Length: 261
Image (tube, rainbow, N blue to C red):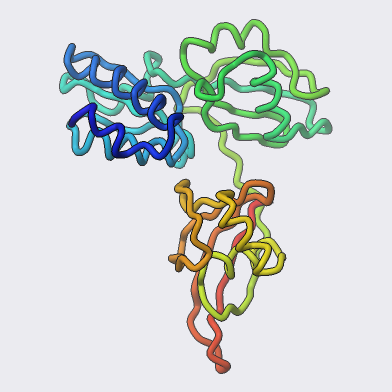
């Protein structure tokens, strides 16, 4: 565990700033033997942070629920167990916005409204939009401000309340199932099939730095994809290579891809 490794792990100046902030927060907690946490991190940022700290005892990642995409890196001293992060003292707060079901605000509406309120992206975790409510996760520091001031997303009026992390509502994602046969399970082939675009266009998105696999940036169109991998492409959305069924009689690979709507 060495701060000087930041320069080796970071790929750009923004990475260096993020990693330095994480280091300062977590290292201070370790030295003082007190609970401390980072802001919400993307999967890629978490990946870099784990390289920075190695196998440091007491570190865990938490975003409010088990399958969260954006998570904090949290240091828990040995006198606390992991149940602490679900308690009323957790650094993660779940806010529930209820609204008229017919309004149907989207994830983008909520994120845009939160950022428009002056809230930094790093203070916002996952946003789980349902039919008449939305559970979203924020840092404990900004929760009181939002409870008093966050009243709309787009044109939708909201009623806000804090809910225990043991009572959150995470709606099942809407999925379109795509069955196809591919010449290979290269990233460009899977992206082309999942989003119904030409393989050459898929390769442009990937080479342009717009694709990630399980939260990690990938700029190689020829990278082979494993079953279960989730692929996000900026501007297109998210898909999952749900299943690889094997070869067809014509020697192509039969796959099932889930596209998140």
